[in-house]
Image 1: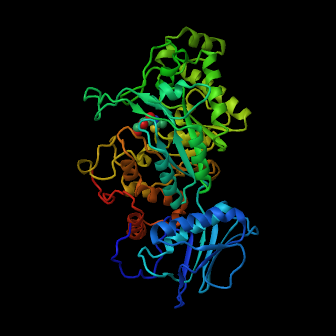
Image 2: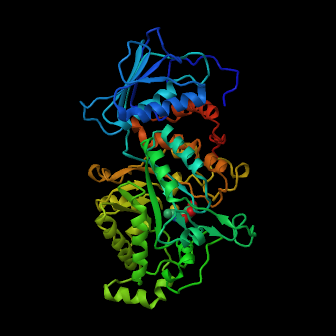
Length: 525
Ligand code: TNX
């Protein structure tokens, strides 16, 4: 929390807002607006209450007071939140006016009002003082991309609900609007499915965890794991919704399936026995593509997942699926023959397309990692391009929606500072500057093709991230750079300007007790 020594009032030559808004005009008028404990939050429409609540929570945590809210207009010393339906601006756009007597935040939709509040949080002086002064100003703002995502792998390591909520709060502060929740993998299944109780009893736990980078370096031998109950998931989804964040769940198939197979060995080609993996990497045991009961199982799982997650898009993984077990499996080979599939890539495509049909029949859209391009893309699938941009470019050319999440520079499990001075990471080097410089819409695409790039996401895989503090460390401050990649128009971006604004952002992080990495400006591994 904030200490008792305060830096001098910030100059008003610049507002240190991250992500940088589209337009900021600071007035030279001498009178400033000051938020005090007497300022009233006017909430014109009840649906804007979550924005007011978020702001009050922030005030309480950082400055130790909250504001009264009112449904009716107040003559002065007010912050007025309102939805104005007149202009046809994009979702998330807002206008903020800081006058002498009032601050107004207007937007077409609720999320825009919420983002206006996030900007207001950043206009407040970081220093704690009796009144929170700010200059008169006009801010017009709108996001560049409609999909601004951040992912977290809770399978390799498991984190409690409270931390997941905190993570969501960090996303909200940076105007991100998608949380991609990687819920299943070889090392653990993390979501309760009532029809298949062994997923929680067996698949959610492993007997030990590898120490260090490679097998052979030892295993701690401790049973490890956990899962979220459906009740907890609902609570997190609601929590995120109040912050205008959609949660996209990921249920991995056909690969990265060891945990599920351990609980239900009949779902694999050989019938097992299998084990919840204790080491990292890619494993040959995958769901059997020739067995109809696998599809019945996965559809049952989806039937329980969909009511929990209102997201239109559901992620089914699709990455890193070895084909060895399918090649040896009589049923898989028969399936290939019956469907005239020429190889195992086409068999995977058959698998994904069958799941897509099911999801589409329930009104949802399938999303998968770029491997789903191999063997033919499912007709309505959204592609998440992680092995560089190649898959994304190809998918956009095929008129499929794309989310760019290239491992370089958007894998936040990679080092951000000198490896010798950082906690063990998976390797690779994605500095703050490298993240900041990224442009999600590749030059190779024509203007029409570029429209299919719906947004951008960074990922945190957690093989080497056992604690919540370390997750936070890997996230911050790179999330700030990502937010500007996702929100700010390229013409408004500047690395030097960003670095300058970050100085204030770091103080905000400290005020919130964020464990951010201070290695941000190291440039060599
Ligand atoms: C590849 S990215 C994976 C993950 C690993 C990650 C490590 C992707 C779709 N699959 O399973 O955790 O590399 O960086």
